[in-house]
Image (cartoon, rainbow, N blue to C red; front, top):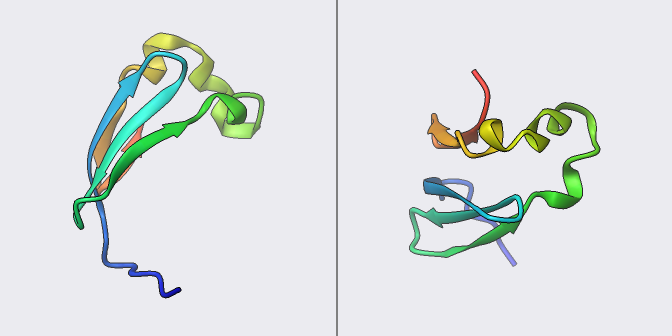
Amino acid sequence: MAIDYLIKVIECEPLPGYRLKVRCSDGASGVFDMSKYLERGAFKQLKALDVFNAVHLVFRCADMVG
């Protein structure tokens, strides 16, 4: 299976339960569960809901801080 690296995330929306609803430039969409990453490194700061819910796209990548 080939991976198309030109596909970009074009929408990102926070959902309850530390999940992100994403839509890609090829029309694919889904929900990414971030909860299992919240005890790891830089992701720890996302446990604060105000930080997690501030998700937005920066250069077509999800960014929650900064």
